[in-house]
Picture 1: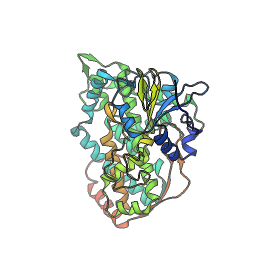
Picture 2: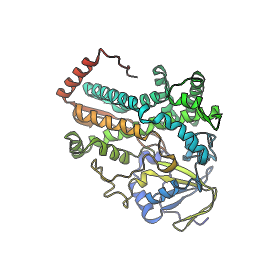
Picture 3: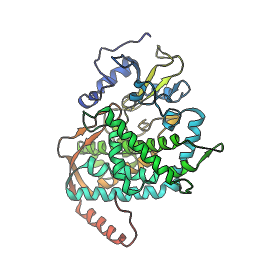
Picture 4: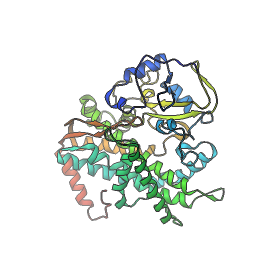
Length: 426
């Protein structure tokens, strides 16, 4: 295999690479000089291709026949050789079966089903942010953002509120760690706990006509045949992790970025930019899912490089979302950016099912921030997740200055609504 290796000592497999280095210059050089880059093998693991340009990422995503997800869609599973969920979990299934299962899942993502969930997101987000601002200072990652997406996806799945703290703890350990030192066994244990939990919940939903995801999957038929136990459990697992991580990490990054950029904060606070465009820029800027992966099913030539059948191909959102040919001044945080065709949710057949809800969560956060606080600042040393897949903060101390008039008005709104039944906060 003829492959050029850049003279850059960057190991994209090592999570430490992403906590100690700014890789902006690395990605720029790859995009300019070696957009289809061979990441060399190391003891105990194969090499793999690194796709850094936006257009080439699109080429891979649009062609599931030649770039399959069924042997894994992240480095950790691809480097291990296979994904045991391949062909069962929608995220690592292609072709007809992927379309059939995805269409079932879409029933739980219809506007009618999502409308009450979105309303609860907005109410709960406002309450959590108001509480944090009243406190004056908090670890935003632990006390605010950690709870909003988990509550949302739990509503979608029909998870009882008494079980949500358990799922939050297990999901935190399943794909990433707050610090170095998490063993591989810890990650496997967390994933097993989530799978066993959904296996139990699945049995309770048999025969139910509810519209939560678990009930829909358990009672569905495809060509007259029910889904297997593995398909049901693995797709619930995929939703609980995917629905939590992207929103949560984008929220943390948005707060961190706004605290460090007074011009952009004032533009949001004063209404000179809308929450919709601000949400899209927050997603692009954070790019919480750094990469996805595929395996080539046949020989493909791209930019003069020969990708052979069986090769691992990784596409890097963290580079594509800063591609100069797509985004003007890509290294500038600009809440008014338009157009903003970021790939934070992926693209193509595997585009994120929960993208709409994630946008609801992030816009609700931005709206609550600009309503209840006049300024915010990072109040201590943040900590980043230890991961080669997810980018974001595991700790984010933040100090708020109150907007007393808005907080008083919100307290009056809550008092007026107190007579109506309210879902307790998780």
